[in-house]
Length: 260
Image 1 (spheres, one colour):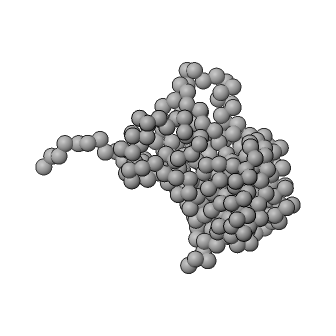
Image 2 (cartoon, rainbow, N blue to C red):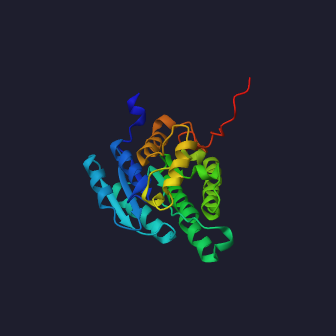
Image 3 (cartoon, one colour):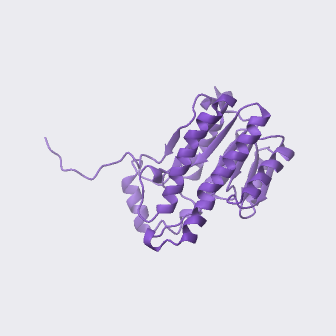
């Protein structure tokens, strides 16, 4: 059974690999046996060290996934250096919490560049390599529980995440004939540097009350789901969005008085 989750002999790409969920996914994939390439706006020495400590090859590049040329460079250098692309994880994103009436054109387009356009560039680059290689593959897109249970003042962010789900489902159908699966992972509240400023003490208390499991999640818990979707264990799953939110989006409890 353990072999179903092995990624030995495969190469994985993770965007936004320098920190948070991306870093956790890169390390988890390496521990499952994959060589790992990544791209982030900043250098990722900690991720590179952790991948190598797992006994795997690492290639960490700096670049902007909102730039199609950088994404193509990532795909090209990964194939040339590590021998191909078997798993591609689109994860790089940024957060903007701002009322729509105060959101400028530059705010809107700047957020979508990384959070939606970058996913399109990544899916396209991955699909091209995987189709050419002829051995199938896995594309994973990190969406968000916010596209299931939206939050005020995150209009651009939630719009991008909803678009990612649409892209995931459409590509799953398009790429199925090539043995390529496409799925999304939707984290709920997760302890990452990106969320630090937004998670005030009051926000944390509210999440602890709303999340069925009573706590905010960790990047490592999201990463375990990524390993599953990248592995042979998920070979018959495609076009799906898996919620990893501790029961946040199913919890409608408001404290009804007992009756009957």
